[in-house]
Length: 200
Length: 200
Image 1 (tube, rainbow over the protein chains, first blue to last red):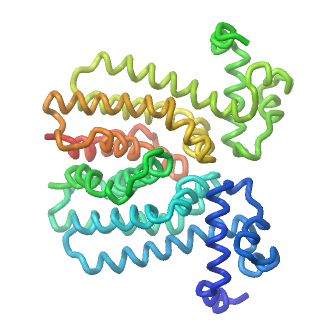
Image 2 (cartoon, rainbow over the protein chains, first blue to last red):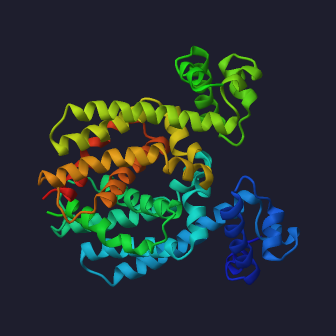
Image 3 (cartoon, chains in turn yellow, green):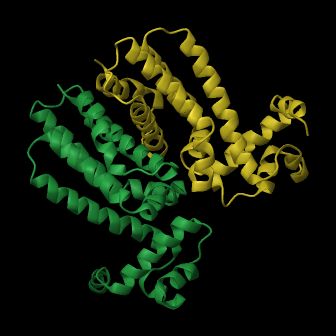
């Protein structure tokens, strides 16, 4: 399979239906307890069809991560280009992060729980798309320091992890909470603490 | 088995050896791939001996969580009683949190990865010892607000999650990083951001 056909498949309806089914199955049964056959059934395709697009169950999980992160990073980069103020840029990243997971509970369960099953997966994720996402946040902080809005003493790498860690905890709390609330409502109070923590 | 015998077992050498072995096995093979027999072998006891103390593999994981959290919460509560300043109290919590996981990589892997295997486990943890730990942090923030050190506009519940999320991300980054560094060195730069974010 060459790169061209792989790229075409990302826009393929069946490819997307299988990924969607995998999110649903992994979120409800857990990744370890799920079988490729369960995903096929949920997608309404034959088992063999899944293997036309994905090498394995692991590949399904990795593809959910990669596809979603590609979308989020592209969307975030696009939005950030329209904004000058470093504070508003951080607010936009937080907003997109919480909106994107807050609108899809199953995807949030896959991201907060199923994708963190093993150090093997986590190492793979943290050195690829997640590193890219961290870099996007870090650039905004560095830019804010250059503009004199954020304190120079703050280590951008540390601030990035604090920022991500805070948002990440909000998502995990949201999926575990018995209360139902819109995840996006957390942007304001969380950013109030973080922005003040960074500001000159 | 009555409560008395269970309490006695917490100080039992074999009970502790089995828990220690479980941390080692779960951290290296992953919880799902581990068998109770692997834990027994690592502890140097017969399989049946494990079942004298633990009902199941799940019970081993839950016991690691409960025992560790009981220690950490008791230690933190004890230390906090000696400190008046809300800022120094938060610093102490962060210090103990990062020292405790930073001195035991296997325990950190179990806490950051293996304990988050399933929403079932996470729901159980988040409503028990983790809720207690969050409450300990929240009380310090509320006290800081009463003393006029922390801003009244900050929602203590949100600040607690931001604080925990930031520390938690530091630990996860530390176990995944190829660089070797002392986790405790993160206390200062992280608290610098968070304390400023909370301060009046």
